[in-house]
Length: 288
Ligand code: NAP
Image 1: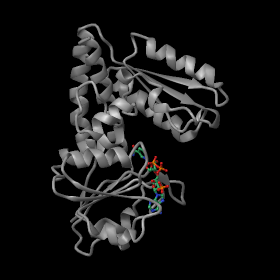
Image 2: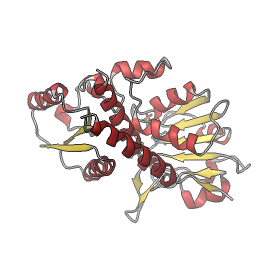
Image 3: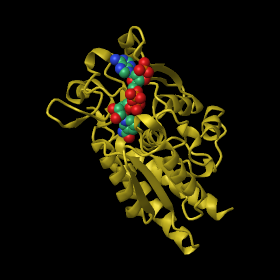
Image 4: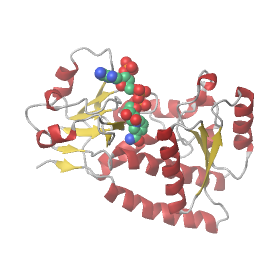
């Protein structure tokens, strides 16, 4: 019988400790405070940012969504970020991607001060991850961090395992590869130019899919031994307009040892990690 790797028990556990941490910070005079910059009205981004705000408030932290016009001028956008970077009351800031065309060329890894960069995009945070030298002032990208937590909390062994990540984006594939290498996995990163993808996926212990294509991975990508673990990062809509992953869940369910559902798998872990990073940023402010 395949194991379903629901995020809810892990989330419940972490939420409890985040609430305690938040209360303690408030008693010391600091209310964790996140700003989320949202440019435009992309429907998916509206939902993601609203979910982030809701979870921040659930643990007792502050979260403002800074909603900006799709047509905002670059100079105005940069001024707003500069004000947030200089605001002593704000611990953390993220920019909801994607950005509109006129802002796309910006080096977004350097926009937010490294102390507030809870998305882990700043070059110093990226270097700390690559060099496996993460300190408490560094932040790891939220989705990879959430995936690692979900695996660890489910006692999934990482060291020595062959892990294939499909997708090489800056927010998922690449940082996740670094994180898992740091945990002694042997990692292969695949992308749209990878040849013989099925041969690669059939010969690994764990498959992480971050492609962005609904139900792309089916049993033809899996080992016939039915012993693999699948982490589905994808958040797509199927032909009926329902949220679904990159993996054809019903098709593979009985052919794997364990699988994350969509929804209820990696998605909630990303938000949990964001708020863990936020509270870390607040603790860092306290010790300044
Ligand atoms: P992205 O930037 O579009 O990257 C997609 C990656 O998939 C690229 O590296 C691309 O290869 C690769 N790819 C596309 N088609 C492929 C194919 N046929 N075979 C092999 N590789 C292929 O996407 P992303 O931002 O990483 O997001 C990926 C998915 O995860 C999306 O569904 C997104 O909504 C979801 N997501 C979920 C969370 C969460 O919290 N659950 C967080 C972030 C993203 P190339 O590089 O060659 O183009």
